[in-house]
Length: 260
Ligand SMILES: Cc1cc2nc3c(=O)[nH]c(=O)nc-3n(C[C@H](O)[C@H](O)[C@H](O)COP(=O)(O)OP(=O)(O)OC[C@H]3O[C@@H](n4cnc5c(N)ncnc54)[C@H](O)[C@@H]3O)c2cc1C
Image (cartoon, rainbow, N blue to C red; front, side, top):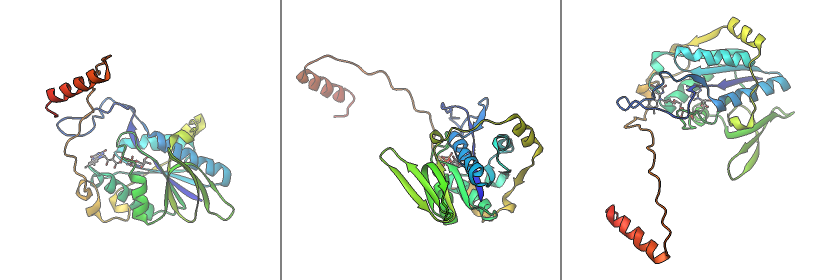
């Protein structure tokens, strides 16, 4: 079984700072980590490897320094690592990112693709499902468990706020995984040593099956008009008044703000 896990390097913060001029994330001085949901995805792949035997490949699209999370993934137990990096990928929105990743998958021999549900910086949760569409294969999102059945199909459990569903999936598919469901293993000392002995394959746009006009900024239909962090709201006012007084108070406030 060949499993490919998509991992993204993200800033280690939930307090995203935005450059007000360029409308891009300020990454300077913020340490980078493997996106938490992707760590969950890798853990699922490694559990499948432990149970049924599998070859686990990790792939990321990003700048050269993203190699670090690939080495971390190998130290956790991944067998192969691919860094998709090329100026042609720069400025990609989610559609162009998923298109490039899908282009890489087309050149690979895979049975299952695992991605995180969501990246903590971009936060769109679009890349996994879009990749499945580019590849024209089924997808299951919000996955909390998956196991292989005797007939070779996957039994996949997905969880949302309202429901839990169990699905049987036949053939190749994309799963997007929740970090909360998988307690990811730590790197081992021998794993770290081995990870630095192994090669990280560097792939450019010429190595994958893509139409280059659909890559990077050129291939991105999304244009960022303005980005800004949410401003803190002023504390509310508390008034202990009767119902009639409350109505009058609210009406006066709305008039003050020219809302009514
Ligand atoms: C117009 C525009 C321009 C942009 N320009 C840039 C830019 O110049 N530089 C920049 O860094 N970002 C840029 N971005 C952000 C970039 O598009 C997103 O970071 C990227 O598409 C992933 O989206 P997301 O973070 O919402 O991932 P999600 O869809 O939330 O991620 C879901 C899962 O998909 C997988 N995944 C996502 N991204 C990758 C990846 N790169 N490699 C491997 N797996 C992945 C992971 O498994 C992840 O858990 C731009 C966005 C827009 C809209």
